[in-house]
Length: 282
Ligand code: NAP
Image 1: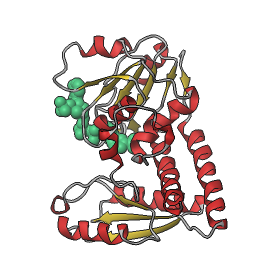
Image 2 (image 1 turned 120 degrees about the horizontal axis):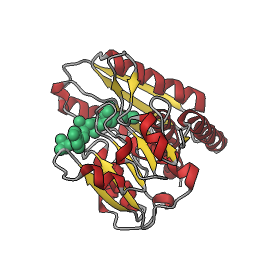
Image 3 (image 1 turned 90 degrees about the vertical axis):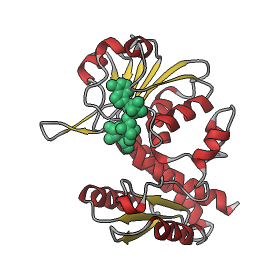
């Protein structure tokens, strides 16, 4: 294996320590960062994820509110709950755990007060996000943060390929890279010459939802491979969208699954909540 494995767990620990430090500073000024997590229904996996986020909050000194709504909650009732929390000045972040039951309809998680973070990302024409005018959705910043932490902001003019165009993962990841001045190609199930396109990427982001989809021949030598996929394999374990062994032979850096993007996503939720609290205090 030639690639350096980006340790998402270690980076997440450092990011949470950074969030905790900022929380201490905010609390010394009388500001108490608070994240509200809404869970609709009783999906066991979602319950585990929500518990994880509440634990992360406790670790960082962030106050948390856990709101459990019944599975038959309508979209209007859910939106009313979100609005109530958004109007509460003591709440700085609101996360709606996905997936939602059919009646509640999908709504993306976001962090107050930049609930419209994704919309702002769309509107943004150019310039790095490092100026922090936008609080970025946790998953997207979590997915790219591991690379940024290792490399610094060196996206300008570079070839980036994102496989996947979902509203939750693929498109926002591509928009984030675009905002960093990268040249971005988005691939999907109708893309022709997928292998060739991927093999030209300096950074390849996989968000396909298919175990081992990215094979070694799709990786440019020396590339950075970010695996966002989470797939439950026939062996009962979690696997990414990337054939790790093959890709690691060619890449310079690679994120593992588990232990890559996932932990960073949770850590970025903490940092985003703290950042939103800071913003509100100005
Ligand atoms: P999704 O909505 O199913 O989207 C999958 C995308 O992959 C679609 O754009 C689809 O293209 C594309 N695709 C499917 N087969 C393809 C093929 N043969 N060639 C090229 N493109 C293909 O999935 P998602 O919600 O974006 O999630 C993607 C992955 O990320 C999943 O494994 C999910 O579990 C994981 N995920 C991880 C996190 C995390 O925290 N790490 C969070 C959320 C999701 P079309 O648009 O043409 O159908």
